[in-house]
Length: 449
Ligand SMILES: [Ca+2]
Image 1 (cartoon, helix red, strand yellow):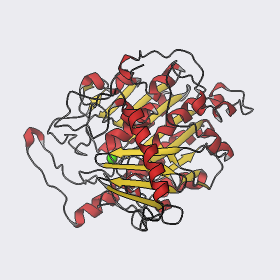
Image 2 (image 1 turned 60 degrees about the horizontal axis):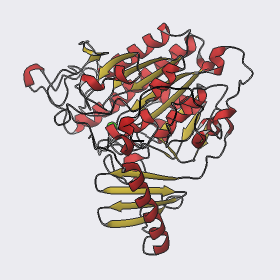
Image 3 (image 1 turned 45 degrees about the vertical axis):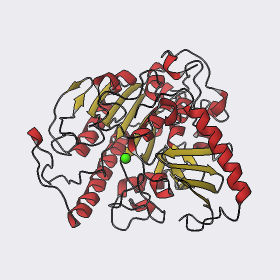
Image 4 (image 1 turned 180 degrees about the vertical axis):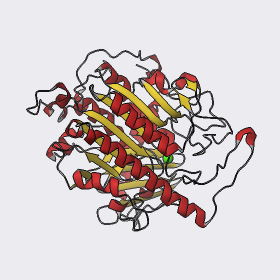
C-alpha cells in the first residue's frame, strides 16, 4: 500500500513484531497507579548541538550542569545518531519512527523554497498514537516539517503548539530567514515577546503544570544553538519590513553560542525541577538529544566532519535518557541507536497500539534502557544529497559521490583509516545491502523536500 493512500486512523492492532521483543516486557512494574503504568514523556531536542558541545560529552568551554545531572542520574548514549545530518529529515524520522525517505522529506524544508510543501498528513506521528492512548500532547519550539498551515503540528496529533515552523527564527523578533513573522499558537500566528529559548521553557513548564494529573507527552524542540547566534541581551538581527539589525561575527559568535547552550541548559533544569516539584519524577521519562551534529561554530569532539555530512560528526550526537526508578543512574550505553527508535520506545512505554498495517523502522529501546538488554542486530542507513552511509556493528561504509570508504569505528572513531582497499569483499556486500535499502525505502515515494 502506498503511503499516500494510507488512511490516518488509529485502529487497535498490537505493536508490530518488528519491535515487540522487549516492548511487551513493560508489564506493570508493581505500581498500582495508572500513571505508573504509563509514564509522562518529555522529549527535548537541541538544534545543531555537537558531540563535544556539552559538559558530560567533554566540553571544557560550555557549562551544562543540568544536562550533566540528567546523564549522572540516567543513561548516556555514546553511539546515538540523528537520522540525518540536517534538521527536517531528522525530525520527520523522529516523528514517524520510520526512515524519512519513506515520506519524501530528504532535505531541509526551507522558508524560501518550500512554503507549500511538507510532511504528508497521512504520515502517522508519535503524537497521534499517544493522543489516541489518552496522552495530552504538546510541542513548544521548532516544527520544520511543513511551512504552510496545512502541515501545522495541530494537524499531526499535537493538542498544543507554540513556536515556529521554519528552520530558524530570530531569537528576539521571531522573524524567519525569508523575512516572515514565524511565531504560532496552534493554527494561527500569534506574536509573543521573549527570547525563543526562554519561551520554549516557559510553555513547557506551563504545560506540565496544567496536565500534571494525566499522562502527557511534551516535545520540546529547542532552537539553540542554531544560528542566528544571539544571547538574551543581544539585539535582533532580523527586523520587521526586511530591515537588518546587528549580526554576530567572529568572537561574538563563540560567546553567543556558549550562552545559547547554557540558557537552554538552565531551561532544561527548570523543566526537571517542575517535574520534581509536582512529584512526577518517577512517573516521567525524559529524553534529551540533538537533531544533527555541530557546524564549525560548535564542537563534535573527536569526530570527523560537521552538520550536513555523513562523517560521524554530522549525525552522531549527544543523547541522554532519564527516568528515576526505571533507568539506573550513571549508566552509559554504547549500543547503536537512532532518532527513529524513539517512536516505538514511546509506544512501548505508553502501552499504546499502532494503526493496522503501520510498520516502523525504529526499534523499541525500553528493554535496553531499563534492563540493559541487547538490541537486535541490524544494519542502519543514512542518505543525504550525494552521500550514503551504512552501519553494521563496528563497520561503517561511507560513500561520498563516487568515493567509497570503509571504517571500523570501534578502532577508529575519528574515521582516519580507510579500509576499503583492504576489505573489498565487505565493501561489495555492504554496497549491495545499501542498494537494496535505497530501492525499498524510495519505492513509490514522492520527494517533498
Ligand atoms: Ca539542526
